[in-house]
Length: 79
Image (cartoon, rainbow, N blue to C red; front, side, top):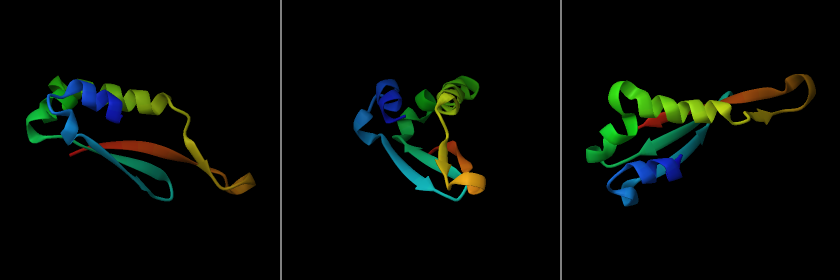
């Protein structure tokens, strides 16, 4: 996600990705400069939705074993 965002924006040094885990999901918080928000979100959210589609294509993280096994959803938040 960071690599993609850095190649979309004018100020790649302002790009950061923080990862937060909950019981059922992994939240990726993408932060970019305010001037670059439009580049990362895109018209009608197309760029952001494309990044989310790439994340959905990745294998989900699993926790637990046996009957307690659960898959974690990856969520992208853009700030």
